[in-house]
Image 1: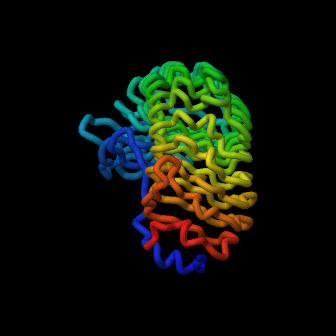
Image 2 (image 1 turned 45 degrees about the vertical axis):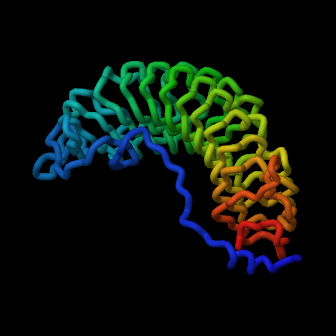
Image 3 (image 1 turned 30 degrees about the vertical axis):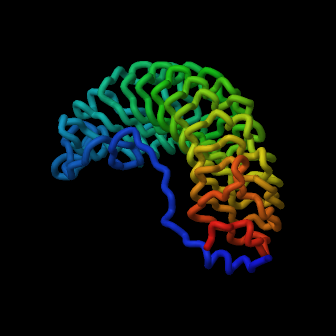
Length: 363
């Protein structure tokens, strides 16, 4: 028996959206996107780079400095001030833990002064084209580093070797075409890595070998067309993976097979034509799967989702050529039982009807 597609949606109850989030520790946002522990206090610091108590700029800058936390640490916001280099230590308040240099004119980053206090450094949107390979050699206590929205084309393989405490790294919106094999070899505490919107085409399997603590990996909007088998093999804690906006013609299952804790996968905007029984083989922990804006997708075959025993949310939207989903696409591979998916969205595809067998969990 065949039921109208709209009727099936009326029968399915949509639960609140599943959010898969992770954090290193409780954090609050500070100007420019840097992260800081504790709650900022609305008070200005009268330092050499900071506004005075009368809100007048000093000779060396017009930054805003706010104390936060319980240890007399400072967060310094020097964004939008046309700096061409970082302020020297003598011009910063003592115990500066957060330094935001977002949207300045730092085209080349040279070796920074020794500073054991700075933990969060934001260098986004500086039109930066070059970073000296020893730039962070003396800032060994960094926890988060934002280098997004620059014009970096290459990175030295030793660039992050001194950042053994680094937990969050953002390299999105650059012009990186290649990542050295050992660039993250010392970043074994990294929790979040963002590489979105670069022209990366391939990633060597060794590149992520040392990232055993990473839980969030964003590779979206690159030009990656394949991933070597075992690319994520050592990433035993990987929870959220964004591969959307790349050039995959099939699901890179050989790279995904050892991601035992993966709960969220986004494959949107890839030229994948068919989803079959092998596409998600052994991705038992997956809870949310997103496959939207897939212009080449035409069919979803029998048992395509058979390994996804824990799947709760499935989003397949804006796939203009998707006209067929096999009635047994959701059937379990081993016990032939149906999975209790909580939310399914098939909006704006070319599906005119669905068999009642396709979504038996809608009652």
